[in-house]
Length: 188
Image (cartoon, rainbow, N blue to C red; front, side, top):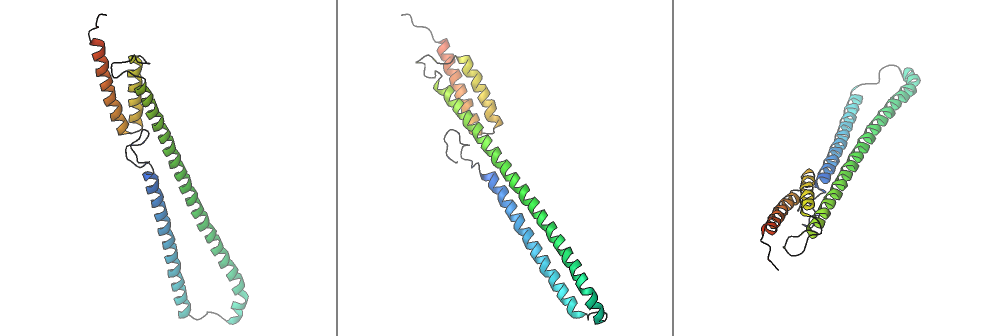
């Protein structure tokens, strides 16, 4: 949402921080996958070269007896290491998903708070006397208090457009109210 309408952040895209974090997570995951593939290929090349350099040690009968148990143990170790790698990948993915969900929720809560702040300001603006014509629906003391609270809330939400807008309108309203209260009353 990049428009300048009430409830917006004055041209700042609210999805930017979530997108940047998601891009970083994807980039790190791809780099990790590339590193694992490269390490696997290097180990395969080293094992192939070592296997071609040496003769099988020992008599053939020894290998007929020990090859199967040795193969089972080796396969078991590789299965356990694959399970560990899968578990680590799962943990990273679930942590990344939880972080993305948390950031999304924070973004939604902030957007809702900004929308409420804009709506409150719009209510005060519509129910105040700024042109010297009609009587205000709300007393000036209430308007001043609410404008002050809205300014504080906008500062907490870090919406500088709303902060400046509230401050400028508050000054304008205070000046208009001061002029209206000090103006001489015309006798009828």
